[in-house]
Amino acid sequence: MSLISVESVSFGYGRSQSVLHEASFKLRAGVNVGLVGESGSGKSTMLRLLLGLARPESGVIRYGEDVLDPRDRGFMRRYRRAVQAVFQDPYSSLDPRQKVEDIVAEPLRALRIPGPHRPVIEAALADVGLPADAISRYPHEFSGGQRQRIAIARAIVARPQFILADEAVSALDLSTRIRIVDLLKDLSKTMTILLVSHDLAVVAALCEEIIVLEKGRIVESGRTADILKQPQHPYTRKLLASVPRMPA
Amino acid sequence: MTALLEISGLTLRAGGQALVSDLSLRVEPGARVGLIGESGSGKSLTALAAVGLLPPEIRAEGSVMLDGRQVVGAREETLVELRGRAAAFVFQEPLTALDPLMKVGRQIGEPLARRYRREGRSPGRREIARKVRELLERVSLPDVDRVARAYTFDISGGQRQRVAIAMALACRPRLLIADEPTTALDVTTQSEILDLLSDLVREEGMALLFISHDLPVVARVAEEVTVLRHGAVVEQGPARTVLRDPAHPYTKMLVEAAAAFDRALEPAR
Image (cartoon, rainbow over all chains, first blue to last red; front, side, top):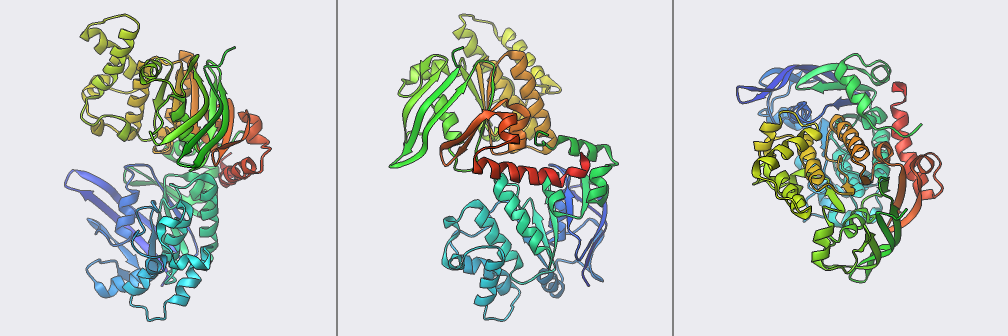
């Protein structure tokens, strides 16, 4: 069942610091969601929980009917098949010693998807707009934007239902950024994206729904168009007002 | 009016490769100029060349006149004297620009003391401490006594960038060069820092050379812009004209990308 639901999730480092407080939201197939927040909002922690890299202190995350439990290997295999990630920095997220072919094949190996892998990898590279000869090259031969395409190819190669993207375009130049957002938008015809970002403009360009996080609490959530038109929470209004705009 | 910074025919080479070619750029006293470029455009190198801080492997040809002095080929003594007095720098990442082992107060106190020596004054320690507090207040830092005693890792990224700006102000430069000063910051912090920079240059009568790849950010602070691509100027002119009605295809492409994100936010307008 194509649904991830976050139910009253709290998380803290140590006793005193609460990083996430009773966060609840749903990720439904076909609806891209933007999780917007600034440093210290808890957005990266939320992503770690969603990836099964940490466990909530209280509350649960469900995938379909099952509770996300990083210790349940059977579940995690199914979950990884359905949920892949793209990270912010295309320079540190790709192993410089591996060829693009091996980098993109990683989920296929990890998920023990039977081969031959080569046609699947070629298809993924074509989907992200990389030339066919990219397959036998190394990451350092590519620009930042192209590297992010390689990272996206890796995320989509096993055809997951969800892609969790952590500031996936923030490190890129503006003109590259818009092309990668267009690519993600294109891919979201067949998969659903959760984009974690501090950048409302990028989120608005890609996501149908927005969740605003401030200091570990969801202060506002809803349809992107509604929130842009009528932000309810003062923090959302401040975020919106802070985005630099082009001269009218 | 004579320009505060006048770069003419600047070419920067590393090995046989030209990283910046035949670049010309003027900054008048009190003007706010934006240098726009994407990664690899040569915008940061150009800024470093303006104050003679180029890495040793890079050769400069052409002319860079800063406050009436030639920077290209100048001796280090000349440059040291020019830096601070004529121009001060604010970098993208305050964590690497600030000394992690030195308390904030002393980091601002040192350039301040240098400036006083330059002006032929010798204020006591207490006078310096008072001035440091004034500067910290000037950049709108809260709780200045605590910040002055703090190390850079004890304060937030936005506060660090404010400290870096206070350090630049301590030199009382005629030109402030800011290289992507808000790129590493949160949106709300970015907005505050941009307001702060605009206020400071206006109130102190400084000129500003603001370097960024982000068009809407540049639009908020600059009156004039220069667009760089692969080390060459593709377009120069008033910010409003260039950003509203770009002439060069490359500038058009940049403006279109920025406008696409702007449109995504449209219901907010």
